[in-house]
Length: 395
Image (cartoon, rainbow, N blue to C red; front, side, top):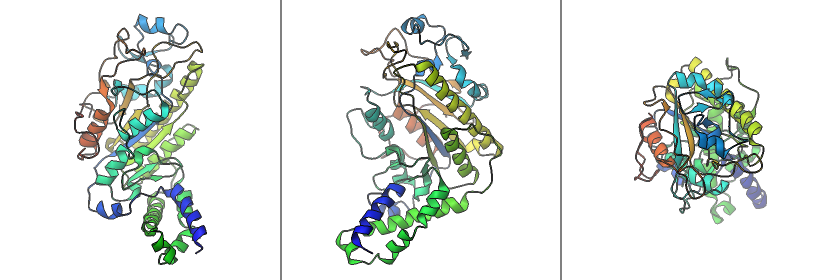
């Protein structure tokens, strides 16, 4: 194989399969044990406005701070103080069944209001002044994974959250395309030319086994995903398609423990009301269909769904009928037999804000991660989450 063509095709393969930094990880983690439950992450990208999601409908400060933006109609009141945005009505059944826990005021010390930096912090579980190159789920794979398909992201690109120091997950929005790509003659050429002097000379030998693992994962996903239509009707949007694919993987019994999905568009600096209402409707309807699908197939009990956004929004509305970047926000946990369903804690004071006019955080998001890992995935958090993070009692 021509060296220039090899390097060019290697770049293509890296973008498709997200080659780990060191192939030795495939060997070192082979005997490690996976957790026994599945985790589905939902990322609301852009910074969802938590105050117009979980609405303090009995708080005058909220209405005074948002004279045009505050929600006044069709609030789904869940208690005397808080209620759902009407777009979240599909989640009411989960709330009533004790299958939804809402954590308020989730954040971290010295919050950063940059989308990219704050998302990195959430995805790596770092301090605000700490820069990590691996994600918390990637480190979970480093310690407890076996194969790339143990973690799948429903996208064309792999999030930092899913990249370990030695081991990465798989990113695909269509497992059939992934499989066809893995059968491309390029891979056969790599195998045939593994002993080429150029590979040894430029220390590219690790790519060989990495591609073998990627190809094997694509084959495994394709062959073990049942080719049958879901009996559950899903909304017609990209996010719902992600969850439908995840349900198909789960219901097929894949040995995948982590699934990562995302819904974008929540950066609502202007004309927020209609935009957020539409996005929350997509989120709630899609998640509701997903849960029903799992229940129909007997897989809901072993699945936990965690929804987060990189930050909340400012308490006070801006001049463009929107909200600017804030800090603490709510996190949704959906699952069976939650220890504390409903509201895990009260909303932070709207009269005691930080110096930027944002809600003060009460729960460190890394405590949420530590709880999920230790109490749900049944693994040690050592080397994954800072040991100072205490676990919570929602599961």
